[in-house]
Length: 336
Length: 297
Image 1 (tube, chains in turn blue, brown):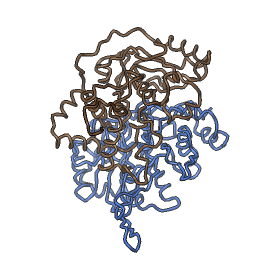
Image 2 (cartoon, rainbow over the protein chains, first blue to last red; image 1 turned 45 degrees about the horizontal axis):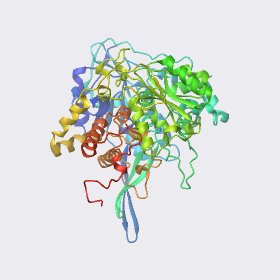
Image 3 (cartoon, rainbow over the protein chains, first blue to last red; image 1 turned 30 degrees about the vertical axis):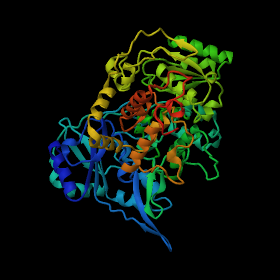
Image 4 (cartoon, helix red, strand yellow; image 1 turned 30 degrees about the horizontal axis):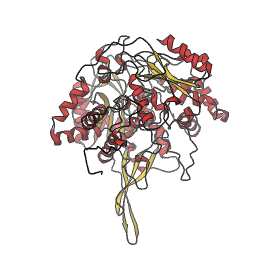
């Protein structure tokens, strides 16, 4: 059977087709010496030699900042008008198999006790086109959390790079099939040889079951191990902002005393104000306690509440950390 | 040098002169260094010293890190550039000179782009600050580790940062504005620049004061501009050009350009360079009756 192929020279056709039908095409491009997911108008801008984009594509379903309502203060009280999300076909090309699994994690939280339409409407129209990895670096640890470049869950369309720079196309979901159908002029049929995938080595000293069990047993909570391993954390939000599963946000009002907008902005559990009470008390007084929370969220709260993963092993948090705090070193400690 | 450092650290911990040694250790793969806090003399072998020791560990001396202060008197492994920050912290009364034991490291430069490190310190992988460094021999230390460096910095500061500042200065007002709006547009408000900076020691940053909200926390062009400008202004006359903020920035905003420009302005206006003398107060916090401007009198 002939494979469906997306030829390198047809990428332009695909970009034009998506943008021409009112959609949005997101792909990795070079920006300020980094590979970043951005809106793409020309296929020539798309880069293919990268490990992971610097940012997670979550910002296209969960923007870093967005207006959720407008308000005016009138004599009779406050007028609050909710904003509607105008979702349109949004195509992300070049996601990696690890991060493709993160959408189900985000969906789990945004539909858990309340359906957050600002998220769901966008995700409903998002098409994730994954390109399997032919490169990895020392921060990659997908195989340690039970994923691999061969993981297809979460991808609507799964691509394998070929030696000539084309892609072998496999549609994974109805959404993916519909996408290929809608833009079929960009696809051809043929046969090609896929490049070998690169698997990061599984970290043998980590056992996720043991990590989970240890975290469930609440005796770890005041264990000095947290301070010992993570007191170097400086409390920036870089790890959470590049993380494909971190999802916390803050609501803030901007404008004048008489009119303005209500915004939903990314927030991070690593900030000391995150849990600061109005009384002045902070239950997470020290930075290592805030770090503990992020770890707990990923390896205890998430597995307990949802079927999806809290951590997909993309390694972005390790690469971006100014003090090189490596989450896998903590996983290792909790596997003992 | 590493052995000398470990030996001294061991002595200090065993004698009880310090309770914790703040230094550098390896990550698991031994490809990057990461801060370590040694409280047990038996663990001094975790300390390492090499050109990958980029972090400015002086942040851990600030009041943001109460759990580290609770450990007791610290010794800190510090390069000359890091010591400049310690000096500023002392002049700003954050702690007294005797509150910290400085293990000054004679330094031949650090590696800015760590992915290019192949075991040899070449000029092209070193940051601008190292090319112009006049504190390779620690200027304030309780104990100096390493051979005296014979490096002399160039007469006129040179390097990428200085070249870019000249280029931006020539851009004109509209050009400069466009340049910075574009650079700041990438800001994701993660505040890594603030958190990694030992001179950003406020316990409640102005961005966190929300009654009223002085600085918009949204990562939109307005919020990004106000945050980055505010932080720059708060570092005038204080910043030592250690480069940590730019190194920490996950979106590559060239913060070194902002900070070095400020340093040049302060040098021209006050003939002052921060971080050299722990007994001289920075120009922004002193008043002199001989001030040439009279609006303040």
